[in-house]
Length: 505
Image (cartoon, rainbow, N blue to C red):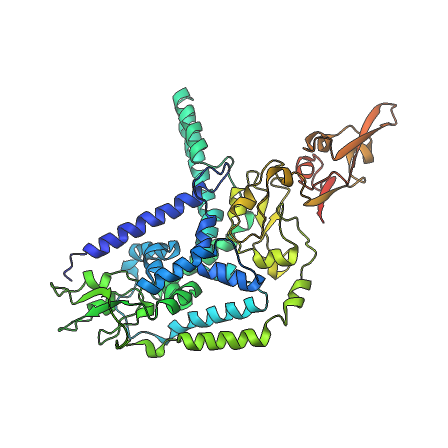
């Protein structure tokens, strides 16, 4: 197969640079938050995240203009976002290249299975119109960022920490190497090794998506991705189209197309094309039988589109569904989970709104300096899966930290200033007098009071004489001052059950 591959090299170079930029921004979304842009921006260019969340919550989200720009670019040039910008798509391309010896080559006619992604998108809109936001499970940028933040970043961070520790130890602790390590840690590594015990399930899902490549290349993008479906609707009538003048009909372009968008007669499905440009570079015709250029589509035969869900059908289904269920189950959803069984990040919305607004991107959990924010499982029911919660066995809420609100892309955690944060109530500390050392055993211990960050102390003490006649201090909580930061619970020396626990309000 003769090819200059010039276009492919350019596309891969741009795709690689953008992928590395994604990784850099996600990596530097950490404490301290000193990057010029954080991972919050990635979700604001994602029309699926912005529009579905806005419909579910009946509001206009900040940053939605960027999502409209993505749609406008898609209308003008086609699904260039999927082929050049999407980090999950780039991951699939890298994995496909690494596993090409183990996959079957060649493609059949475009499959009607490609319509499945439109049905998934339709169902997501359907649930959103009822006030239920489910994109946290299906959005490709969310999947990539969440997997990187919970699995890949902690693994790399810990591996580098261990490598530095090993090298410093075997070289007998040279000062220059220790200084170099601290510089690297300050600029690149996390303050502490982040731990996410429940992240195993997230990684399994990611591996399952990668394994679909052995069935079909870019299986997720072809058949399942709802963001791809939304962009395909915008790209269906793009004027930037593929032109061909093939005389040999060898089938090379059809077999190389990663999206299975080219038919046997060399016509193609415009909305399925991600502009990877492989069909141009792998064409054996030295003069290149294919090209992409802007043309009028007034009289253009959009071959191959007859089996695709049309924009009119999608709008008709969506409109009918909105008319049928708009608001009818909103009251029910509002009643579900009003009371949280877990402690949420500071300045979170009310529980019912929070679980619908949160897209489970993991930004807040990754940037948390004490690692107290962890992904939930089913503590608050299915609707709360992977939403952030406090795990006081791991950490506590840093009293003077407001990073989680700064990186939340949808406003599930409100952006507040430091003065407001220090007054924000997350929970209430309660002392279990049956196991608290001063109360139960009349032994000295005021660890909780010593660590309380409130200036005039939310945990106070009174003095009593124990059986030996010695004065000891017994702690008690002042509910009017406690904000529920949970440092008292985290530092309490009583184990395995803590003598002071913070309960959600």
